[in-house]
Image 1 (cartoon, helix red, strand yellow):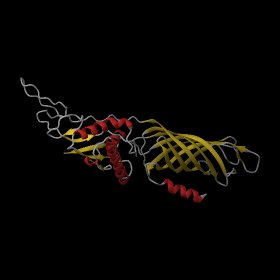
Image 2 (cartoon, helix red, strand yellow; image 1 turned 120 degrees about the horizontal axis):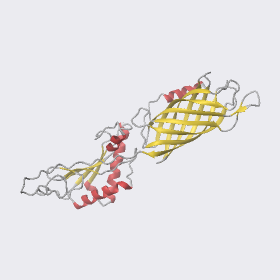
Image 3 (cartoon, helix red, strand yellow; image 1 turned 90 degrees about the vertical axis):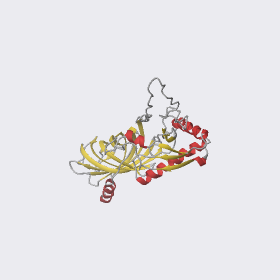
Image 4 (cartoon, helix red, strand yellow; image 1 turned 180 degrees about the vertical axis):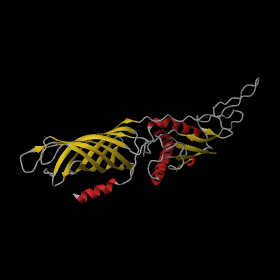
Length: 339
């Protein structure tokens, strides 16, 4: 038992962090309890239960877990014909850290109450503290497998139990995506009457008489002669994903048509991430996002020689990474234009 507890403590001391796009997570669980030898109970028995996680944003703690576990079959007392059922209700604070796009570790610490259907051999209803560590594996966009080990210490007598659980986590209550940032066009200075104000047909902030690049894409940044320098492709990737959702295709199609209509234009597709995860992982993720965007443009018949991909990781944020909204703005893809 001491070796098991020491290994659990070692796991629990790891520093972890996480990100989530959902408010809640519900997890049905099955597992077992390995009891200390002096409790006068079966040494090993099965449990089943359910936990509800409340994801926390802009906080050191990533989740607050509320749940219960109940022995599936009667647990026998030693030295007699008596048995009991055991229910444990608990609250834990959970800390999570992504290792890859699919795998993360987590630690937890908290307290709860255990209730015996039949009290005997010194086993009584009471309060316990617990801590533990686990692994979470994402098997689909909205499902994940969880395995953890928890060390329970009973408050009155210091009795020890080791719980091991397997769960099937289902997130729900998706966080609303922030509205795209609308860039303001430079104001057009009107000439004094009776001269009519000059026209700016493509609304890029440069009047037609000075505009060397008419029909500029909406919301693109332009230079002093009206030629595009930077285009936000308005792709908001899911966390740890480089897959472009269908809802963002219209802006990519518009950009592809513009590139085909202007043979002299070239573009560098630059992708960025927020600060969640390591520098090295975010660099690779941004490169995958840039490459995914280039492939989408090539599929729309844009000449491959006119577009290149580059990833900047988390090195060039345009907003704070301290809020969910700021992180969403930093997970962006832009086209840097050149003639």
